[in-house]
Image 1 (cartoon, rainbow, N blue to C red):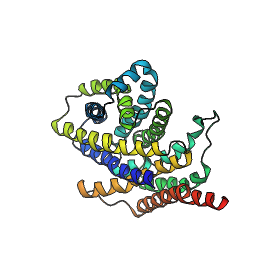
Image 2: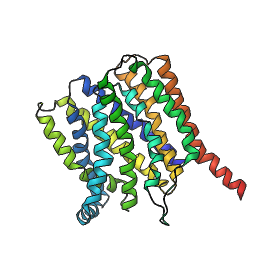
Image 3: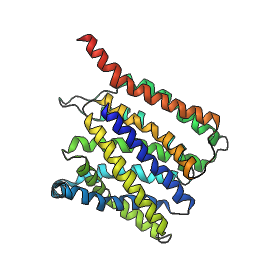
Length: 311
């Protein structure tokens, strides 16, 4: 159960991203700064942590020896994940982005055939747990209903599609790098951040064309970097490390991120004085919560019991 507990706490800290991005959007901050500054803050923080743990030379040496996978999967796992999330904050509230983000639960499972086992065979899609993901997807759809009643094309292209792209990119980049390196969690995150640096420099440069970031946005992006970028990412990557050889359990750990919907909603109500979602949206949120419970139970409780019976 330890991986699940770590996943739940990761979801709590990840939810701060959606709330703080909304705060920055309301304050007029550019999405380019919201995205790039998070990782530009993360890198020195991670370098300090990794250096204190004695792993900085190992990270630098690994990147020098073979930079390509770090650039490719760092860009996919972090760049194609966070830039779309910040774009979506321009038009959608935090709880809705967090809800749509739960597509990552299905995405993580569907990506399984892209990875190989130790014997060289392809991983199989964990259908046992995936059947419960349908509840989560139905919940996501219900959360979207009230917004599609006043449908605008920009909502689809800026509020939904980017989050779906992010939902596939994050687990893909994370899983690929888990297979290609034996660095620990802190070192792997730092390596991926450094690999994705070209994205953040380009995005920061684009932001400068609209003016400099405000002092409040600097402070808020630092909080996102600390709470979500460091604390949440380390917790989540540690949880996935513990079950990386079992695609079913890995999918269940990734499913704990459904709790971000609840945490984001609570944060929005507390700090942004938002209006409570519609009854239909609340039903959707409930289905997401039920779906993640059954998804996790199928892998961490039912499967071990079945093994005991066979023995």
